[in-house]
Image (cartoon, rainbow, N blue to C red):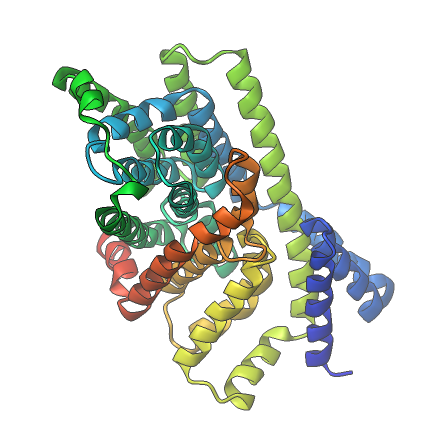
Amino acid sequence: MSHELIALLIFSSMLLMLLTGQRIFAAIGGVATLFALWLWGKGGADMPYHASFILLNWYPLLTLPLFIYMGYMFAESGIADDLYRMFHVWMGPVNGGLAIGTTALMVAVAAMNGLSVAGMAIGASIAMPEMLKRKYDKVMITGVIQAGSSLGIMIPPSVVLVLYGMIARQPVGHLWMAGVFPGLLLAGLFVLYILIRCWIQPELGPALSLEERRKITWGERFRLLRAGIIPLLIIFSMTGLFLMGITSLVECSAAGAVVTTVAAWMKKRLNRRVIEGTLRNTLSVSCMFMWVILAAMCFGAVFDGLGAVHAIENLFIKKWELSPWGILVMMQVTYLLMGMFLDDTAMLIIVAPLYVPLIIKLGFNPIWYGVLYTITCQIAYMTPPFGYNLFLMKAMAPPEVTLADIYRSIVPFVLVMMVGLAIVILFPQIALWLPNLYFGK
């Protein structure tokens, strides 16, 4: 049996296991271990064993629980409520204003968290009830929250870009800077879509009534702007100090966690319930990520041991005779397909070791490619039938929001994100200008 056929058999076995409803880490890690034993005998058991030690020695992975902790502390302590209240008051008079304010809230959460899970939780618990109460269309609401929360893996401090940097051996600072403008571009496209759609169909996102607006004085409006100070301090304590060279990657995540906790304490919201809820959620999500990463590293080691990098290169270049741009498009398509079944971490660890060397060989910039990968992950997260965000949204949404509503809600936002992806592909400097300016070419 050829190496290419074995690689195809491993990959199809993993997808089949995922379709049976097995947990992701069990499907990926179990298939990897069984094939390692089949191909290399008893010595094959060493591959997942060594992968686990590589993971335990992966020092930058300490950032993962700290970033997750920040997001949940931000939500549990009510700091996110204050920020949403500010956006609610200032954007409410515009048709679709609360949806725009929710997008802005998602950008702020993304800049303090690095994951989409916390943004989804904050949007579903804070923004969704407010918009439903004000007769916003439920399909529009769920689309806005899903699309906005996906920005968490693009805008620094993105955990996905940290993992990509470690796997692709690229500097995290460059990747974070590269994610700024594409993340803001996507947020801007979301806002533009909401404005146009609600201008054409005002009933989808009605503005606050004149009576509600008169109840809020200008003095109160300006006082609410103070809610933006704490998020700015948290962002500076992490990304700002890191880019200034004052803190390392792990230190900046620790600084952000400390500042978020101190902010909750100063606002007199740091009680037993908040601490317990934050720690439980942090432990649960962190363990889930660690198991998936461990399993995916085992799978990647076995897959790469078969010479899969050379097999893929041979398939794309020699057999299919694709151009470099054709290969790039093919890679993005495979990410979209995998994203229907896997989370971004599993995809990254399985495919990045195979694709990144080929990307560099073809002459593409690996920093730019990291941004393309992340945007594609955002799209894949929202793509039926098994997009990760779809079922996460269903778990958090109220009963009146059905799975059919959630599926319909993401269609326009997926199209908008594809436009954003095409723009970044056509104009690489959107991603590369800022890191080139800051760090030098």
